[in-house]
Length: 457
Image (spheres, one colour):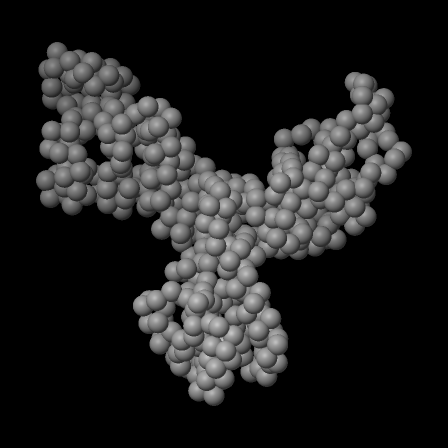
């Protein structure tokens, strides 16, 4: 029997819903407030939660946030006697399946419950969801909200605008939306607007007719024809010229266009998923982007958080990239030292997930042992110094971070690591003069040269 949890501070409403839903064949539990509901959720699993919004202590919106941070798949239906638009918007933004106002008709609440349970069954296909979200790593509250939003909007034909800094995974989200859409079996056609010369972008988007210009020896289909009945992904859409913006608006409004040099109207049915690292609202205000086009593209906006705003996902991402590149390079690198992880957790990743992947790829390629050390992390030196400053340098028997690294590596490897680092630093300070570097470390030239050769420095 599907299990439903009812949360309402009014005993009469709890009792009414409990009797109604048990008659419909559901297993029903009830809680008088959000705190009691949290306890029930911790003890057993539910297929649906129906919660009042206005409750003392822990209100419905706070309970919704708690539920979505622990199990993104549970649909939550919010009910309230106060028809506040602000509450409705807040509930839906935070992942509520639907919003019902009191008093409601029995048929209406049952229809919402049936839709929510159907959603639960559709989304219960773990294999499909896992495939859809391939490459997107993260369990932070910020990412859980994005997964939930993708699941809710993907089956609709609404255009989506994904905005966020470079390297946050905008194309991965676009592909996930397509894979969970009603047209997943049809084409997903990506194009990077900034990568195509201005004089060719129109032809790439809309195609061209034979003889339209020098070199046009045959008719050519553009992106929109290739994506017909599927999805077109326009990356860096903020780079489009005013002329192309106007032509794109016509496609969105009329669902038709002409090829460059052509006379025939070509009709298409394409879902537009676009992405930008610019603030398009500011671009609109500055007159560089059409306001009407912006609203057509941003029916559903999705903001991708930068990695510095979801640091809790860094260990998951590191583990994922370690496994990926250890297998790719045939290396035995299996883990990252606790000190190296601390350095990463202090770093703000201006290049976001793409930069972290690059750091781990280089680290695996450079590392000779089976564990990534701080010296194998190629970070921006200024930022790396700031990150290291948070935990001190690896020297001195009383340094806690150094102790942890020694326990990770074992004493012998730890000493080797210190030797390598200091020798490399001495060479750098002496402009690669072995004689001067040996003097800096108060070593004989012969011993220093031996160490340089031993460590392949």
